Image 1 (cartoon, one colour):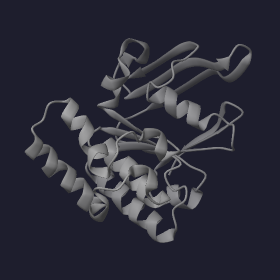
Image 2: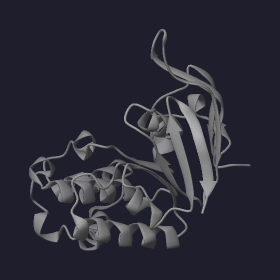
Image 3: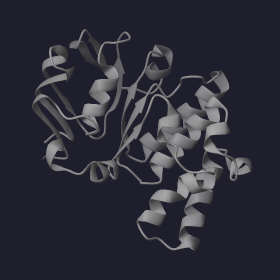
Image 4: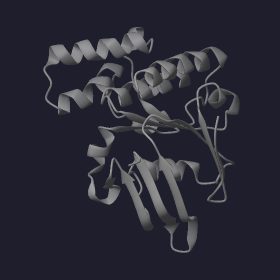
Length: 221
C-alpha cells in the first residue's frame, strides 16, 4: 500500500478550466521526491491535493490508505506537513515563540513542555534571538526557517515543501539542505516542489516533471 495514492484525478478550479485530467501517481513514505515543471504546470495544485488542502473534482486521493475527502484537514496535518510557497500564509501569531507553541497549546500540553520543545526548534533553526519578534517582520530566510519549524512542531512523518529555497542565498540554501538531510535520516519522507534543479538534485532520489497538467517523466536516480 502506498503512502499517497492519486487515482484517475481530475481537478479544476472553476468549471471548464481543467488543471489535471485522469492523473495517477503513487508515492511511498520513505521517498524524497522533486516535483518540477514550468510555472502554471500544476505543481502547487498537485502538492495541495496530496496534502488534502484541495479535493479532486473527480477521482480519488488517498493518504495513509484513506480518502482525503473523509479526513478532517487538521488530522492530515498531524501526519503530512505542508510548507506554503509564501511562508507568511502560514503565520498568524504575534511572536515567533507563539507561532511555534500554538499547536502544542491547542493539544493541551503543559507550558514547561511547550517551552522545552519551542526552544529546541529555536536552536535548531537559528531563531533564538528572534523569539519576541513578529513573524511578519523577519527576513525571507528567517520566515522560511520559522515556517518549516512550525510545521515540524506537529512531528509529521511526511513533508510537502513548495519552493522552499525562494529568497535564500547559497549559505541559507546549504543550511536548509543540511536540515532536510537530518529529517530524511530520521525517516521523514518529502516532496519538494522546486524550480531549483541544482538544489533538489543534491537530496532527491525521484524526479517527477509535470507540464500542462501531465506527468512528462517520473525517474529515480
